[in-house]
Length: 169
Image 1 (cartoon, rainbow, N blue to C red):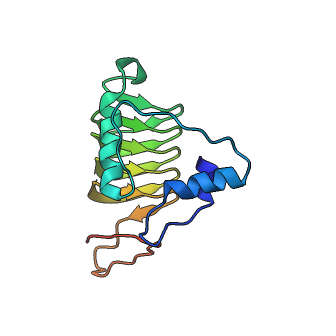
Image 2: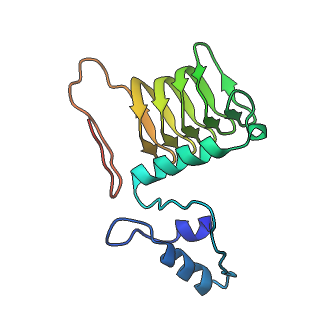
């Protein structure tokens, strides 16, 4: 699935389409089947839907999934001074946290470094660096992103924005 996802492009609507993933898998000789879903299902084609699905899934994880207090810590996580973790939250492998408030409903991918930031109800994917003395809420941050605070005397924002992005300043 993930290999297929990495090899397709968003549709004209700006969304990744499930049929495109199936087509890629079939074209590349992967076995594709089906199963009737009897539980709930959530379309995650839009950012708000993805954030809601993340919260729903975290809320349904069994007690034995969590490391402690509805927090899942990956191997090699380093938690520095003044860090508050509010579950449910998932912290990936080899993350480093300093002076942070993380959660609830927050996912950090592997190898993320966060400092002086408050993150709630957000998805932050692998290898991100965030040091901005700000609050990040209801956000999706892609792999290898760097967010840092500007010098105090600079009133402009310098942005590098990917395709189909939304930024509210």
